Length: 164
Image 1 (cartoon, helix red, strand yellow):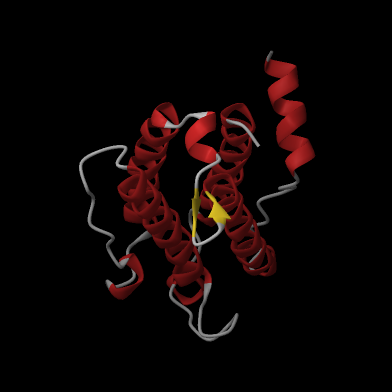
Image 2 (cartoon, rainbow, N blue to C red):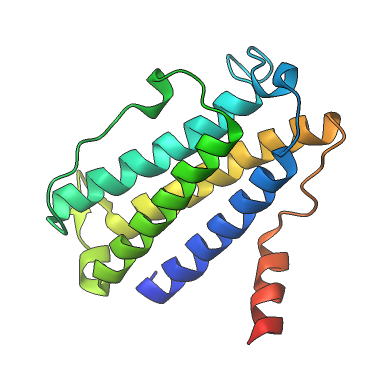
């Protein structure tokens, strides 16, 4: 996997996340704040978890590779459940931070390993982790009558090809 592959993968990650966040607009507090629906989580806490994991992995890898000033790894899930608007704002900030992170990434850095796991594999995990939890959120949104629509990577690939 090279930096170009990661840009595509995380372009998809952003596209799909934005579709889920858009579908969540207007959902009632009973759906947003529910718990115990998927394991211990509900819609809001699932989406907070995805953001928290995204932030932690980016900060951890960035810190290990010394790509920027060391960044504290916050525990976003330990904070009270934010509103959808606050979560969307936090995602906007994370997308900008991740863009800067990818701008500093090189193919050489992607091939480095920590505990035997290459950086590119760690980043593939982050994207795949998001896919799993977005699908959980999509099921909950669909049940609430607010389906985000198709989230398949091929649909993203097609949208990118059409724009090119």
